[in-house]
Image (cartoon, rainbow, N blue to C red):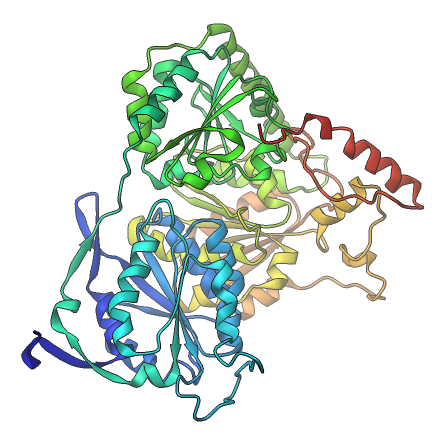
Length: 622
């Protein structure tokens, strides 16, 4: 039995925070605190108890003051991604709208398989004061509230109804966040009264624990089947996804490709698995990919898909590959490994690649390798033309080219929703592995600045002399810009490349490509805006403490970028870009979007017929 001497009396909130401070992880032989700290906005639902507990450990668990709960979640995701899911941050918000603002961030973390811990206020478990401020009453189920909205977008969910429950719930949440197959956000609802209730916790519960991320060995039979399929290949290809980096398998992937001369293409999440100059790096694949990668994808007969969830932008809505191509899914997650009738290899990418290498005696036919390499040379010419400037309207690609040429090899580039992810994916030439974060799992506007802030916090812990560079459109900037202020307050410098095209230009482009007239995307095409005017982004960014300037063209942008690199605080560079001209026209596969089957508009009808004409290439799951 536990004696009184073996216990310590703490509130629930104090116990949660004490436990978090004693969780460590071993990374490359070094022990680091598993939780790097947190992002918090206090309200009545978390300030009195959780806030009291956090104030006692602000050196061990630094709490970054957020400006918006959603952006706090994005920042936590950017932090976790930079640490390759080996460390995480928590977010705390008050009961009510503060907590509900985190739902979108949880969705982003869930889609991208990123660990964040959400510690959110909840209504009183006793219900004695109900209904309380900001409570969302459900007339037929008093246990059902705003926090239940998180259940579809987190990997682990619990409401703490008694102080003793955290003894089970906290380890379960951590186990979820460190599970390679089930990694994602976790949620703990903390009723306001329970946060302050005291309990005699076992002292042993707070002992230091060092975690290690599991590496699951692949099944020998699955490895044998995969080897047999690869041996039969005449035109093999490797798809390298984000899971390659999370597994730390970049070296193994490169060695495997080189040993067997298999061409490699990258997903959006897998950008920067290989440097651009590697002869077997054939480019990004899919809807926002490259002509080179898509050229070999449509001809490959055996496709080794490593660490990818095969999202529709990778597969071209399942038109990018030959109908009879055999996919081999190598993934720690069974759900991803088995997609589209793949031969499954369920296991860690590093261990699986080593197991395949040990049993595979095979070299790719030289004509196939030559075809792939020649296609990449041609694509490099397209990129050079895309990023060239002078005598043309300003474009995303030109800005990307300028920054790409001038940045340090280990600088981190961030992009998210809108047109910039496609342009970065297609035109960025990777200088070093693991340096690109294009958030396209949830394609979430607002991640550009918040995610970059979180990434910069992580970068400062690992590579403080490097820069985090984020590409942001004017639409995303207007949606969520307050973490420019956060970065200035916390002295975590970012370089923000703000490209102003006068609205939501990439959706306007999709609108036009499907036969529709421009409507409600560009400011100039909004009937409810009689007199559009441009935002003074320089003044706005400067009002939040950043250094900011506007440039007229890519040449001036290059000079401004030098000043941004030399600056010691967040620097915003604004450049107008053409909403219609300068888009990367090459490299796209078909993408399924809904188009009207019935319309009186001849252009829309013609576009529908043209769009549907490629559907016959769509794989039906076999």
